[in-house]
View 1 (tube, rainbow, N blue to C red):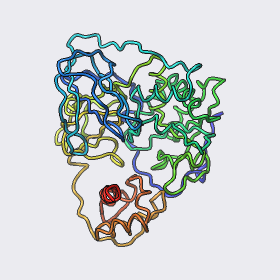
View 2: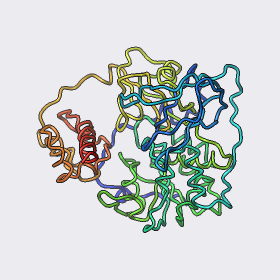
View 3: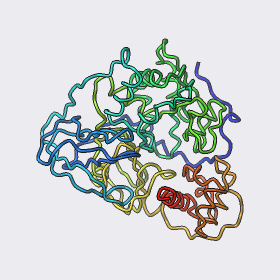
Length: 445
């Protein structure tokens, strides 16, 4: 039976920004065309860049391995199209830094079929073999974090997992990628859950779906295989309900400790799109060379959900989707946790859940005023931090104090504090910069 959580079982604090999902939630996934040149960065994940195993001038087939993992904290890269390797050189990334990448020119007129590989047989594969298959498939968290999935699934020796949480909340405004995957790839999701249950040793799985997707919840529940120990649960609509700590709190009433991991409370969480890719790829021994993204926002003419080849240049994608006049800002990801781009000359990567374009009408600059200590940000923060105090310390350059006394590193940059601030202080941007400085200092110490 489809169960709905009462409002009081939702996490505390949080906000309710406009959902802005009506334009794309009912649009089926469409295949995106191939760009004249694809740019495949060797670092599309948290960890070490992959090591190229192809050379310039080499012809490759779609799905062929282009780069192998460089150690455990790395994943493989695969050809998004059949074509020829133009060059291996530096390319701009979302952070503004130049990163090594493989430039691939697709063959015109190619069928672009993906060949079968060596399948990872669910019935006979060991957990270690499943982890290796996920790494070799190049699968990372598709919700935006791009953390290597095989690393996340490796349960610490002193931990026991009893519950697998499949995150289908998708609370970020405008994005409907997961919504469509849950409608159109249910069989892949259920197969993926079987792999995940085996590799984690969890006894059950819960698919968490926000209440604005009741059609999705009902469809998943009715399609659940009778022998799959899984359920679908509806949680309240609130941002950031999709953050794993918040979802665990809402579904299981368990509190992940400060600085801790879900495994500390016997839970593993996996994004629903990541789960679907595991179920889609592993039985065929294939690697991830495309993903579903949402292209939307007021600055886009052909809004929709697209299965787009990894490495598609953003400028090509925007031109195909049709930009409105006076587009002033493009976010990779959603407007709350996504990143505003300073350049369109970057490629779509595995961690790209969507891109949202806004015009001048939505992005008029707001003057920043001094903090008035209204505590709106304190009431909004789902982790019970004090964004006001953190903001003042950031302005004073007291980054170590932010981390040591005010738990800066617990912040997952949801943007709720910035959203509610009447003084228009860019709190989350300051916290992101401060966290980077603290990591840099402590890493070099």
